Length: 111
Image (cartoon, rainbow, N blue to C red; front, top):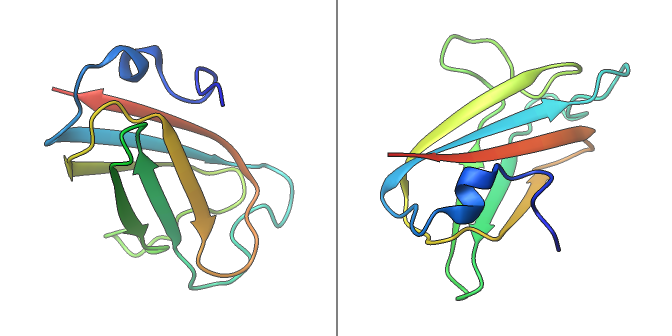
């Protein structure tokens, strides 16, 4: 699977993301009802590499300010400071329940 279209080139070239901040940008479709169809469902995100190392994260539907994520037309940016996987080569993303029109994902590592 070629991830060059959804993962930024900086990540594809990064030698290590371990214990660095990982920023992920999710873009939900703009058509009506593109958001997660189950009102309280968050998403599961698995990040892995070719060495069979992976990390699983849960992302809540609710933001810290009480607004909801993953709605039609939204762009949600999530940061993790504790990603301990080198050279992420694949992502597995799914809602806990229901359906979701995920248009694009951008994964970036920061120093």
